[in-house]
Length: 196
Image 1 (cartoon, rainbow, N blue to C red):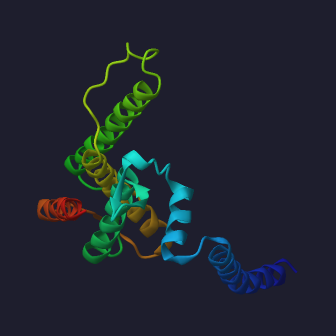
Image 2: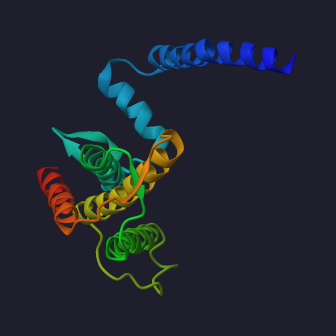
């Protein structure tokens, strides 16, 4: 009885999950604002604060994500693509030196975020918060770079977790174990950031 019920549930989920996903996509496309940029803005609002002063603009139009989120998602996508091409089913934790680099990226992301928030609060409440120090004047380029570094760290964590969860035959080879791979990934990230 239980096996039959389990079999029925598995058969239903094979069809219901994709159909539910399709219904969500169709609903979003129907409800979201018109045009590709309107839909991109709707997605951006779901995952980002989109403050105008903290976003890049293209021909006077604000991009769907702020500079920090743009960097974070660009770094994550770049990292996952790179890791997939170079390490396929590997799921071993990177060497300590690579982890240290990612920890520095995350700390820089946090420091820049806190500094940027304090700078914003000081500009809104000028007289009340003058006693709070600001380390430096934040800018979108720095937000992009710190976001990209954190995005790469997120990509490694997601890639390892995904491989260990999905693949039955994943291997324990360390990802980014070769210094050349780390260098290539960081140079790709810097190149994409420079183009942005």
